[in-house]
Image 1 (cartoon, helix red, strand yellow):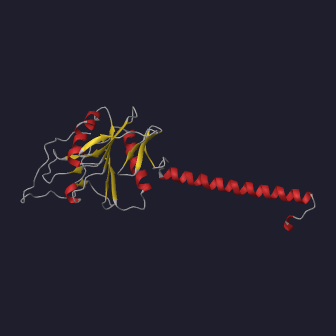
Image 2 (image 1 turned 60 degrees about the vertical axis):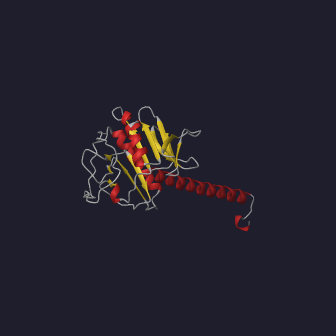
Image 3 (image 1 turned 90 degrees about the vertical axis):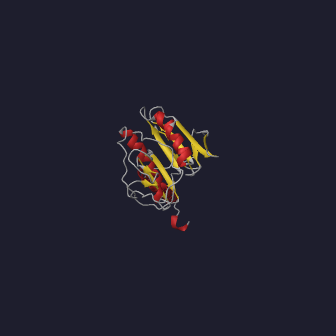
Length: 240
């Protein structure tokens, strides 16, 4: 992604500041590849499916976060590849405008690395997410090397997360693990079950129905064989 000019955060806001409109459109460039799009959509769709009964979060991908009332196109905005904000209304937005969202910044950010963005994601953005956004959980993932690194904010500084035996990293904010599955970044439940997409969940449900039908058919066939055996012995199955 393009690198917006970064200047020191404002320490105070004068009373006569005129705030920009709150419905600022996102201003992010196209994604680096089709695979980047697939990865972001996968994270977004799986979380929305898992949290389909919840209305207290906002998740988005490649969407601009505006975080200064002194807004100009060249400063004070970032566009994470994927982010989640907790404790807010679940509704559509043109962008995330911090001063219109009760000062809320993302609780979780995931950056998908590419050769052109890796250095920025690992350094400049990490500093911004730590010092300005104060985002509790930050992850980056490389689609080429499958490198997955995560941090949790502790006493104002990012501390590296340690992978579990499966190589998954725990997100305290999501209550989920993040890990690599078939070359893509996926969510895993606390008991290490893969969080499915809607399509995968539908396929699983269909498989369960088919298995149940097969079990019923097998039970019927066993009952028929037993009945036939009883008739061979001149025993009425209805009397048993």
